[in-house]
Image 1 (cartoon, each protein chain N blue to C red):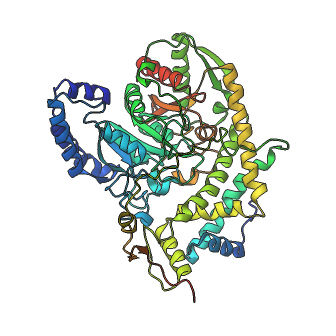
Image 2 (image 1 turned 90 degrees about the horizontal axis):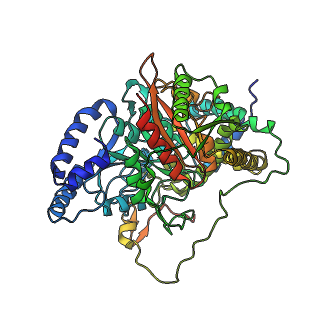
Image 3 (image 1 turned 120 degrees about the horizontal axis):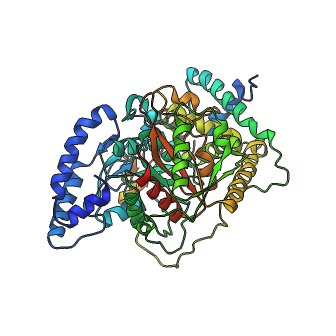
Length: 98
Length: 473
């Protein structure tokens, strides 16, 4: 039996967290698909993982340090020029403060 | 023609690069109308580079990949050439720099001919999830070419390029190679720099190589491997001569056959062809052992939880501010919501939402942490297997290429096309697909997956080289 892990209210909250708008049709389809997926993944609960360490990185991560020397980087005008919404060397966005 | 043969002809001044590249574009113009492998062709840039290389060849200044036509997956940044990751979100995005792999190919005399189709941001096992087009299977145009890197695999199968690069998170490149009947190679994590690859899952994404010959893969590995301080997992080690691994003989190797592969409901003809390949290995002197990967059935769920969680974080950068799609609004929050809502396709939105669910404080331990513990069990399975054998062999996929529109329904089912490749990605192991036969019913290609231990590319390439020489397809 399919368990409903995500409810209508919860999907509203998740879309807010994700900063994504969904149409009403998308919400209906996603509710079914997301719950199907989580029902499938809940299979992992069958496994006893008590005392098993989590593997987040395959190897001991080695931090690559750099010499503290200034090197050439991308020109500011090139980076800013990737959007038409730029002004005086800055990215332009809608007003943040009310 | 294979890539290493082509380079020999150029070196010997038997062919003119500009003429070959011109003829190749003419061929793509015809063949790609139905296939849909390319999103963009850089005709002008490629021909300019071809003319310059012809001049260098005349002066006996011959770089290692001289004039080699290379197709690049649209998830990999190419300076001055539009790179969209097959998403509306990045329509019109022109990267100001080359990915390290692209720079290395260009520096070695390779010619970037264009950008190939991919599932949007590399999410999904089919290029059907592209925002722009569907790449069909060259063997049967009613079927998928695989994915995420379906465009690159189809381009090689249809002779539209001699080498192609893809990106890969659940060994879906290996899967695409299987569906298209070509070679696809995913090396150990850290051998090839991922700098400039548009990644949706940083712990799993890798660059993959597609080609028709094993020597072609080795040739490209010689160029693109090596340490890159721009990639935090890049391995700082000497790069071997990968071409030297293509030699006769596998008598010294023990081959493990995971019994779980054959517990699945394999499509008709797959088991027969895999067993034939195992017999060839035996006849060449390889020792065969049955082994077990008991946690294989949990790999898909483990991958999905980790990948969706990482995608929800990685794709947060697409907010319409610095590049990519921006929907107009007077309100900053509304601009984010509208840009992301209209820029991302359905599968990507579903992935982000699911990832945020797993990362929520209520579910973090239950899913996200749990998945990383199961990842340890899967790694342990492989460690145990490699104590008994040198190489693992099995089908690349339990399925023949599904029909278009049927594929996405299978992604998360037990019969996912990725059921056998995803564990390899989680473990970061090197793996290579070769075509080992065709289904007698419909002539669709069947792929054999050759898996090695970490940094044992030598054994993987050697086995693939020997098998390809001895298979009668």
